[in-house]
Image (cartoon, rainbow, N blue to C red; front, side, top):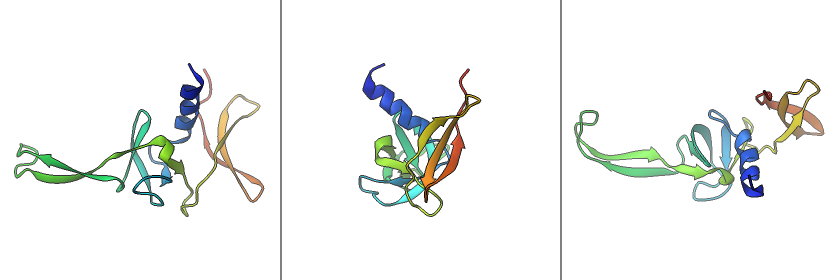
Length: 120
């Protein structure tokens, strides 16, 4: 595994389905949303990066037409944010029992964001 891949793997551990994220680059810069899906190095965020898809009439969509769906955003263009929409800088730390914890610093105080999977 080269250095770039390792860096991307560290970043992907920090963002999961259901997290609130802030877009930091691109057309949707400054907007926040919830992660719906994770596609490799890309995420689909609810209500952001809307694309138009032309569909033929089918059993599922009898009239056909133009649908608006969320497009994916590269993971480097989003960051985790708190409930107020302020970006968080997350760090990984191992505890004494071997579990990994994601945490952020708020006013010189350590705030645990989430526990990561423990090693096998």
